[in-house]
Length: 253
Image 1: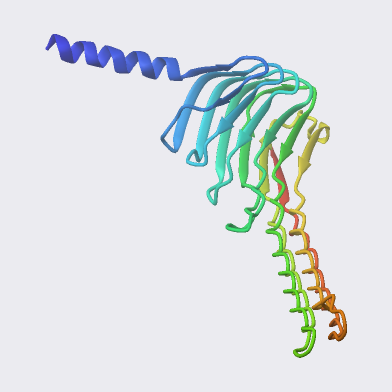
Image 2 (image 1 turned 180 degrees about the vertical axis):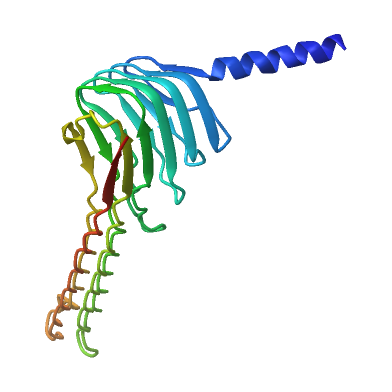
């Protein structure tokens, strides 16, 4: 019985500690949570500090939010929207809440900006940027270089021409910007907020393959076969299109 009581006390202490989170200045911290929903009594992100919210979190409720100068809250990309409800927020200059999409790579496509539903019951701020831009599109593949031709002989044979370089492939379209639903009291000057909704830039074009060199003539004393022509270079791909922009809705209460 005594062991059970001690175990319950430990869990209670852990739960209480998790309701207050502070990120010291000039540091990066990942929100220590495994569940999809979390409630914090107090969250402080000090000057030039960054708090990362995992993709698994879909709802975060905060009693008191303090963000210092150039403080950031980063939200990992996800198909699920994030619901963020704050009772009392005091936000310093240069603060950002970023839910940008991830750039595409050769092995995975770009991801769109995450959908954010932000409700602020009480807000004091100097400036605030909400960033839900889409990720840059996946780059195109470079064209393969052409193979070199074979050299000719001195009395027989024929030099072969260099092979043409292959064309590069086109970059992929950038991912779409996310959407923001903002709920604030009627007196809040939302005009002082900046919301970035742009779609991601198109993926870089694949470069052209280089031409292969033609087979060279050998240094023969009496007779020799002429060298062959070089191949032609490939064509570069085209840069991908820009992704479509997101949208913002503002509701006052």
